[in-house]
Length: 173
Image (tube, rainbow, N blue to C red; front, side):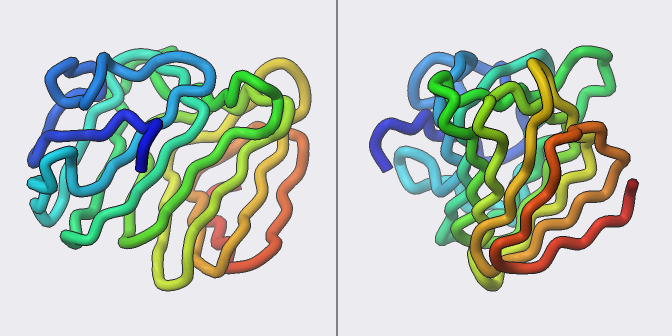
């Protein structure tokens, strides 16, 4: 898809690795990233762990691979490192899973007044083992589509949770 910064490394790397992206490292409200087959259609490893090695801000994060790759965004364990989700317009941030099974072990913070939507398609699963917090007031999450979202940590967002479609599994608080 156009308008996305595409991940282009066929193995472990850091999110902040500038050569891993189709453009400079995405880090701004409204920035959109795609974890898929890569710009040259050459990401095909069974799994690709990406260490979230700093604090980053994104408007949308999408997983869509036809090669069967499972992406994992893992925490580096450093306080303050993680991903803040902010569309830049208040319309809501998005994490989309359009194929495969993926995981996020890094902490997430919802800064967008429109909340955070998880769009996980049928047959796909997203497991979030990082904690989900909020900044700037109460923020909500919504599960929209027929896939499975697993929340596996204690979360502190207070705006509520809406399940429109799909399955929500919680293994934390």
